[in-house]
Amino acid sequence: MSSALTVCTQGWKDYLDERVAGRIPVTVIPHGVDTEFFHPRAVRPGRFGIPSGRFVVGFLGSKGSDRDYGRKGTDVLLDVTRKAAARLPNLHVVLGGPGWEKEVADLTALGVSVSSTGYIRKADVPALYSALDVYLLTSRVEGGPCTVFEAMACETAVVSTRVGAVPNLIVDGVNGYSADVGDNEGLLSAIVELGQSPEKRIDIGRRGRETVSRLSWGAVLAPLEGVYDEMIRRRRLMGEPLPGPSWMKDPEGILRSACACDAILTVYKRVRKRSMTVAKGIGMLHEMLNGQSIADIVRGAAMIRRFGPKTAIAPNPKVDSGGQ
Image 1 (tube, helix red, strand yellow):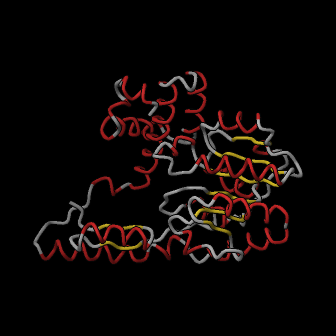
Image 2 (image 1 turned 30 degrees about the horizontal axis):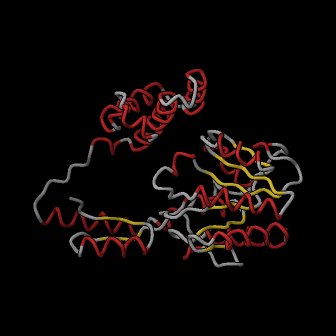
Image 3 (image 1 turned 60 degrees about the vertical axis):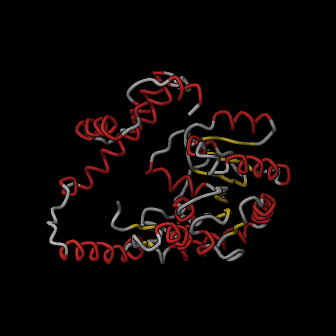
């Protein structure tokens, strides 16, 4: 049983409050963004497969993230970009992240100019946002989403469904555009307007950065201190000892190990499902583990055995046949 819950929006707090009925305190800890890391970058021509002189719309996320009942709205993303290309002949679409090969082929067959990045290192993400004229998010359910905050910090105009923090973050026509989930035409209209008005696009990008610059992680995480203070106060009143978990002595090490764990699982699942060759998987794993120590990788592998899904250790025909 949890002693406290944190959520990133008031909407999620209201949702949980109805279900926990006051038994567990729920505190809103909003998303923030590191504007020192996420800021406009100079991008050389041709990077990310973008032809020169194009109006560029893009999205960042692995294709696999949409397998959770279509919550990322990939179908909407493809529908909107296809229709936008028909109205904006100079449009180019960038799909950032791994797994988009089929979608690239489908859009290309329809005559849409499109490229994908494959796995992209965190160090290159600000440059990807900066290479876009519009960041398009079509999710049906979100917490943040962090990518909207990051794109705005890079002065990229955002067009998004009204999910997560978006309704409280974006003022339509001022620092971005938003539309209700299911309103594909609303998303399309915003993209076309931005594609036809570079001045508007630049102004919205600038105002977007001004908006998220007030949302540094240091500022938005301040309420978290009160959550922990209250938990400590309660445990002291109950006479419980307060030993900290041993892993807290090295939180950065845990983060590095978790990243290694994620990299190993990502490649393992693809090779196992034969959507990637072993040779390509080794190359991708080498790139994803760049900078990780042997100790981090060993601890990451240990995390898989202890916390990962059983399918990561032993083949499961049911999972394979179900396309999970």
